Image (cartoon, rainbow over all chains, first blue to last red; front, side, top):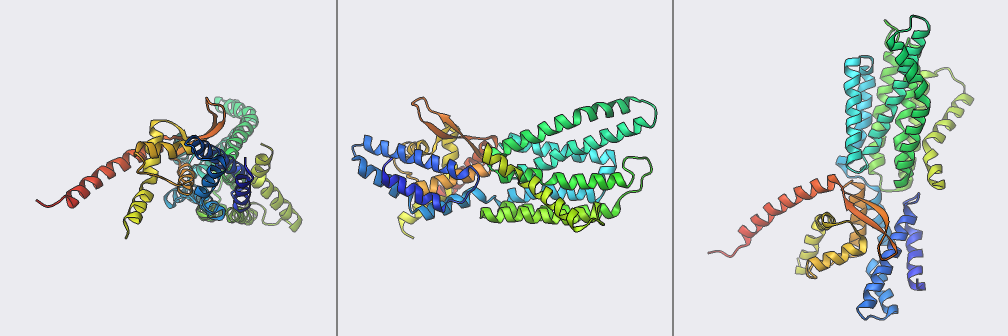
Amino acid sequence: MSSDVAGYLDRLRTHLRLGGSSDADVMRELAAHVEDRVDELVARGIPAVRAQRMAIDALGRPRTLAHLLQQAHLITPWRDALFGAGAFAFLAAVVGAQLWRVPALAVPSAAVVVAVTLYGLWLGRPAWFYPWAGVALSLPLVAGYIAFALLHRAAGGAVTPLALAGIAGAALYFPVGLVVVAAAILVAVRRDWLDASVLLSPLPGVLVLIIAAHRAGGLAAGADPVPAASLMAFALYACMSLATLLFLRAPMRHLKVMLLVGGALVLLGGSTMIAWPDGGVVTLAGRAALLLAFLLSPALVARHA
Amino acid sequence: MTLGSYLTQLLKGNTDVLILSLLQREPMYGHQIMQQLEHASAGFFQVSEGTLYPALYRLVREGFIRSRWLKLPAGPERKVYSLTKKGQDRLNECRSTWDGFAAAMNRVTAPAG
């Protein structure tokens, strides 16, 4: 590679702010493009030095090209962004109306989430897929809780087929759940760790709601509903739906990170009010650190992938 | 509007369809797409890199195409783009719209008589 080409690519690199492995990927692709273009021009009889100059000139100003690439790489179209944000709006409706307490409504709701996720997978994982996949990943969490609840119920009563199903579910839950989440993160990180973070974002909220529901009596027959927690969870997921819409439309990478962290803080505030209203400052700080580490962990995975 | 800018606007509005159409034939990498576009249009369509690569990244982001690095038979690795099911559906819609548009344009712009 000539010094002209290397100099151009260096200047482009300084303006490119896609983050993760995307910068390196784009640079590699453009370097290969210049190489192909120079070979083509040389084959037409143009001297190598002039061919390199022409190949660079065709790319335009580094700052302009970087800006165009950044816009194309980061901004999701409105329709897709709204559909992606719809995952959290759907979750807000399910928890706000406590549909999850009625199996006849909970099962079709879960089926919708799984169907939309599989459709996104089939389409080649567009940007709207990740919020839906995140909500779909929370379903094993709910299923795991149900399995443990059935196990708990079985311990206090007779062993029934339902209780045995609970025991089997509990035994399988941790390894299978961890493998599924880890595999999903690894796949998402290949494209962008921010997508993987979006994938993880519904899980803490669902966990908090499960804790609140368990404290209110869980699956026990005749347990009081948890209207305050449901209302708070509804508000929480409505906020996350808005944050996801802004995230998918954000044209700059640092804005996306800020929205992710902002969403985590809203989640922290909401979850504290739902499940731990009387916690101290130290506990709150610890929980904040844990939450941010969880949501930003894909960045670490991407760095070492 | 000059004829040059008229053609530029036409090309700009149809870059996505042209890329999707080429990728329907076979998976290709960026430089290959530029070459094929020029070749298939007998030199009429010449898309710059500043138009092509942002369009490719946007199409990937929207799920119309996907990309992966592949080792070419000639040796080097290239980032090869291929059409997704969503991209195929979009292409079919665009073709249908284009047919209607072109027919209407021809009817209107045809010389009278």
